[in-house]
Amino acid sequence: MSVTGKLLICLLLPALCLMLLSGCYGASATEQTEDKYIKAPISESLKIKDLDSLYRYMPTEQVLYLTVGRGLSEESGEHTWQEINAHDLAWYKSNDTDIYECNALVQFGNEEGPASGNFGYGNMANNATVRLYGMNASARQQKSYRIRINQGNGNVSGMKAFFLNKSFTDPFRFTGKLCSDLITQIDGLMSVRTGFVHLYVRDESTGPDAMFVDYGLYTMIEPVNKRYLSNRSLDDSGELYKAVDFDFGRHENVIMQPTEERFDTEAFEELLEAKGASDYTKLINMLDTLNDPSIPVEDVINRFFDKESLYDFLALNILVDNKDTDTTNFYLYSPTGTEKFYIIPWDMDGALRRDYELYRDPSYSEGWEKGIYLYTDSLLFSRIMKSPTCINELSEHIATLHEGVLSGENVVRMARELAMNVKPHLYVLPDMTFARVSRPAHDQLVEQLKPQMDYNYFAYYDTLETPWPFHIKDPENVNGHVKFSWDESFMPAKGEGMSDDDITYTVELSDTWDFEHVIKTAGNLRTTSFDAGVMSPGQYFVRISAVSPDGISQSAYEYYNTELKTTVNGVMCFYVFEDGSVVRSEFE
Image (cartoon, helix red, strand yellow):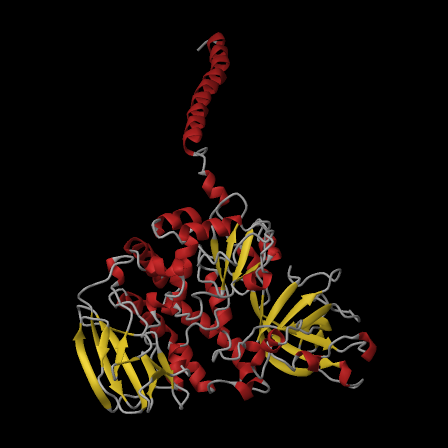
């Protein structure tokens, strides 16, 4: 080849490569436009998620040194440690008195003492206040506390306040933390940060030689408030409510804008505690719509609730059999820019107790209170349980969680790890005095969590085939006869507001609460009343069951607390007097 030919090739080759590369890049750019620049729906930008990285900064176990009574004088008007522990929270409510607080010095460290780099190290002045926490917990021998860090004194892992929960009635002493840790693995829910704390308290008001007293193991819990939201990079100006005794009823005379002249803060806070915005528009709109029976519950959910959060919340509590979450122990959160509410679980100490109750009382039965019937007092939740469409969606979440995060294997694995932290404290003083079960029984109950999770899973499906529980009305004397009546039951699968004509009822009468001596019985009743005829004066018990077409029975809501401190479900106690009057027992 000539020199001229070689030169021509050298000149043309870069141009040819440039053209080829240009074509390649052009195709790639088109491909990127088609595949990489697809816009997400605007709704995705409004969807809230927990911040997983936040939970890495919560120590598993810490030692907390709490000094109280420092600088206390009679003239200061401050309350002592003894004073704040002297009354339960019900006492303050009945006496219309502000809850006592005392000043405190909070310091974290190790068993040797406050440690460098930890909150409060080197402090000599009070940096916090402390008070009792939890209505029921405040009446226990071992109390729970709320600690609030003073302004200008920093924070503890981003928290200006935190709770120290003793979990006094929990046989494991780790159920709340276990559930919080499980929730961090559920995409549709937000959790709270928790950690174990070994608490020592020194009360300097008792004298200059006061020493730190061992108060045992506590669970440190992050509160849900505006800081909770901002710590997760979420909108802290939205509506946020803590359910106190909230059945999702409209309650027009209580739930209104706080700017209205007739607004009663105390009455409102008996239902809900507002932790966010002072504009309740979205809450009111949601309740107006939900309480309109002409609007299908499916439409209410699609408009006002994040479905993943709602169904994961219900599935979680059904699978761990948490019996105290129908009208309380959750938060409602709606960020700015959307009508939708998210549900944040709270206080899970009442979960996973079935095997413990059987350990305490082999005759224990949960009666109607399991599966979908954990949710009968709430308008929202009960409407969901009466909707075949909602039940199908809930069942999908139940199955997904049971196969994954809430499988028996995963729950037991995490419970074993937490038990290793708890048992060294639980079976030494001071906690050993109040331990609910022995160490071997503790180990046994941990291992039984797997079959308990399976039991809860299948109990859910069983309740779908079980009649709805019902109330027994007060017995009456009608022309000298004792007459009983009760509310009509129905099959939940039939749909909201629909009864099932094939349900029958069984009535039993006895003069003993254990029904060893049955006086009268009647079965296959298709009416909701029964004439027991003339009955002699005395104490009696009636048990009424609804029976499905397949022979599955359901007990009534009523129960009787025996002298043995056990509970008999589905039973009502009543008295027949000499004058023929019939009176329902008040001690149920």
